Amino acid sequence: MLAKDRIAEAIRQSLDAAVKAGELPQAEAGHVLVERPQKAEHGDFACSLPMKLARTMRMSPMAIAQKLAAHIETSEMVEKVSTAPPGFLNFSLRPEWLAAQVEEVLRAGETFGNVSIGAGKRAQVEFVSVNPTGPLHVGHARGAVIGSALADVLQAAGYGVQREYYINDAGAQMERFARSLYARYSGRPVPEDGYKGEYMLALAEEVRHECGDRFEGMAEEGAVKELCDIGLEKMLAAIRQDLETLRIHMDSWFSERSLFTNGQYERALGILDEKGLLAEREGAKWFASTTLGEDKDNVVERSTGAPTYFGSDIAYHYNKFTERRFDLVVDVWGADHQGHVARTKAVVGALGVPTERFEILIVQIVTFKRGQEVVKLSKRSGELVTLRELAEEVGADACRFLFLSRSAEAQLEFDMELAKQQSADNPVYYVQYAHARISSILALARERGIAYADGDVSLLTHEAELALIRKILELPELVEVMAKKLEPHHLPHYAMALATAFHWFYQQCRVVSSAPEDMPLTKARLKLVEGSRIALARSLGLMGMTAPEKM
Image 1 (cartoon, one colour):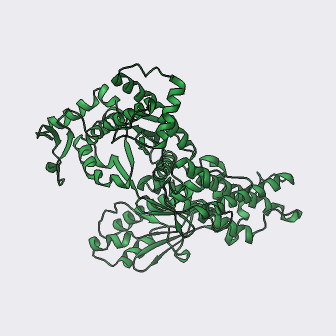
Image 2 (image 1 turned 90 degrees about the horizontal axis):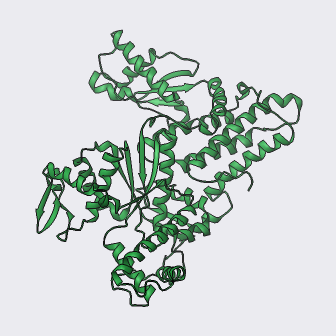
């Protein structure tokens, strides 16, 4: 149990005791929120429950806080309980308990930071899912990184996680792609609404190199159908390679076509029809969104009988929840899909899925800069266009850290020059340098033959040591918060704060001393350094970054 949860339980027990003693009127505590205060003088944890109870109890928050504090005993963990206006309960942890937690971090090792809120539940994070009609460009990079990091956070929180790419391999866009590829292959003009990018020329040349002229004498429709499948596989292979440059992997590549060949589209629409939520108008089939409070109805099937994107999405989410039975589904979408959120949530609810099991993250756009100059991302300007080019120029670590540095719903400026700097001004370098410094300290200890398994962590009493321990212990709490709120953007800020705490400790406390009389403290500090390594490497790992031992 996390320290904050133990404190929350102590507060609930104190409320029961005060009510039984007749000191406070009967009231339900509900969720007891325990947080870390912004100022150190307020202790390690604070709770505002007295302010929440004030109206129900018809008492001042301070009076409630004082009654509750009187029933909370100190313990091996809690050194002091105090109250503060307008009605806070503040908790200070014992330095001895904090020092002892270093051993717990070392015991947890590479699993430190894991929590169990998702235990026994299955989560799916679907992200990127770009139409396989062209290479990934930089506009897709941020959503790819956020989805990847979120999946790792949910896994650390105990969920069984599936990372999925939804392949839009059905519908008009694939038809246009196939006809464009056929035109390039056969030397004909590309259709007006086709794909005219240079990559299509390269793709056609690759197909001709492998297949020769076997499509030349074939009827056009047959050639287009075969080229569609060949081109699709080649584009997906390229997309996989692009994602690998950012260390992103998918557990599942789900075909949109399968929704129709396996009957899921019909089954999903059948559920809506039985509930009276489908209507026939103007020869098309509509989802009656207005009956559920939406502003307008939405077409799910055109008059030609072809499903719309929305129709496919209905079947896809039916598949996720009803057939594959995920407990939590998170879709990571670009800002251009903002207008689809309400209708998708409405139809998922109409399929009988509780709303709390379905989340959509909208990822806002990125402005790329070189110093103060905005980068125009066009091929004519010779600047970056593809995701792969970005990763190759600034590196996967910098991409992942900086794309995660702000919340998904906030727009982001990405300074490509800063991302490549090897200085403390670059937060990526700053954090990784801290890990390299930690590794060098541990390497020095090994060179000198200092074994520290028997180190006594009770010797860790310096202010900088305790501050570092406090920061290390925030990681499991952070994982829980990120998993609950779907906010992986806290990771870079935690890593920066942890690196800062370590650098301060390193400046204040000499770790490896050759003096015999200093050996007990050296061993204790080496344990703290190893604990710092575990926490920093874990936070870097959750961001999908490397933890270098040398820089």
